[in-house]
Image (cartoon, rainbow, N blue to C red; front, side, top):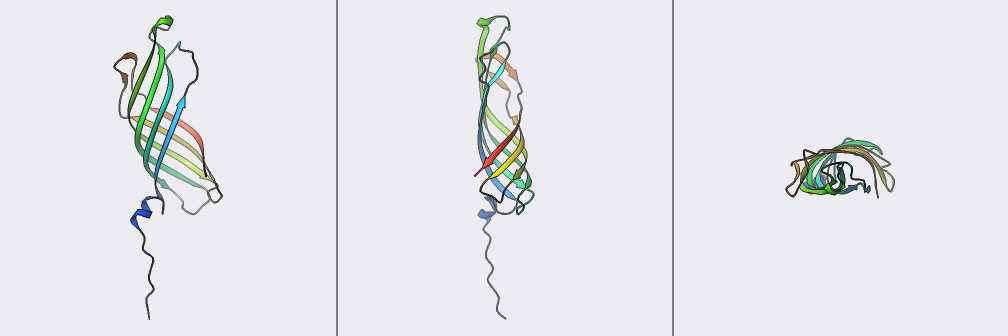
Length: 151
């Protein structure tokens, strides 16, 4: 009896999407177009992260998943130091590292695109503080709910 050769499984293929595990990267931008500055507003959140995703099902057309990763985030705030004084308007900027956790549900995976319903939280590894401004001096985690489409 002869033996049949079995295809080898590359550890690299396992890391980039085979099985339940996937490496991901994403960029994001969010903002507030309002010019109202009677209170402190987050005007811009810009960032990117990389991490690891575990998908519960590799074969189903629908699947839950969970991801975690690390990245960088730029936060820009605008507001008044004194809400009654229009001349006290300031901006504050902070760039720093973040940890993120994402939970989602992917649909239509067997078609030419997929739909991703998700919630994601960002935990900054820094205090939001600008040395040139006293506008913001706080820990500023954020939470996002969204819909993504992949082709």
